[in-house]
Image (cartoon, rainbow over all chains, first blue to last red; front, side, top):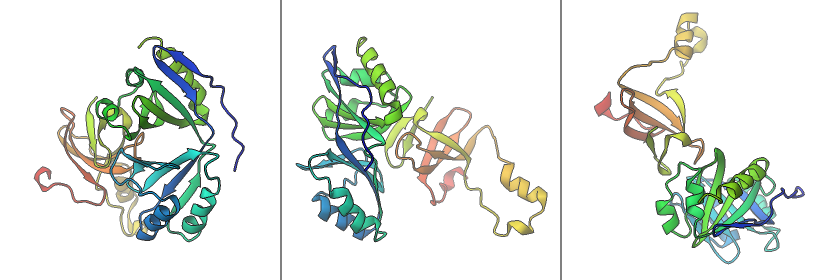
Length: 182
Length: 93
């Protein structure tokens, strides 16, 4: 696995909005659509992949977000189970049941929490957060300040935002700046 | 600006999508047998009508899936959305 170089993101709290770098997290992109794929993933992660759009599944170890009908992202704390990628890769990618890619170094997880987080996100996104904010466990892919992001409503007023590493500092600065105005 | 009902993600703003041009253009089975004009017709010539148009769109900032849209270009009204491989709704032909 590539060494994770942390972007320059420090903790910030303004207007009831906490913005923190939420590393170190392992993120794995999984793709597949056949029966063997779903069986293997279910067995290894002990979780059923969410089939409904814009939703997620969670257990004590893993969070799985729906990205598209045949694509999901699994994320979890680095200290939970570092062998899971090898297991998934061996049982799925190697046997050509699907595709498993470690994207831990590609995406940065920024945790945003507080009462005004949806006002903050709405100020830079075309996404309608009405349904999202009322449903814990919702996930979506959209744009915030013209940057592609994956959002996971982890718990009430607590969102994990995944963004490409190269955009992360810029987005963080935008979030901090914009939190002054909500 | 208008809303597009992605068949996978639901209703989203147009800015999350990218237009892929006219839909249902079939690649010729034997390109080598075509004249230059026929090949150019297939490759470059697209309709740009005022009225009902069949288009391909990609949810580029979402699920990244392609799908087809029937859109009235005169008022940007989306009349129908259907998945790739599906036949266009007969009522708009």
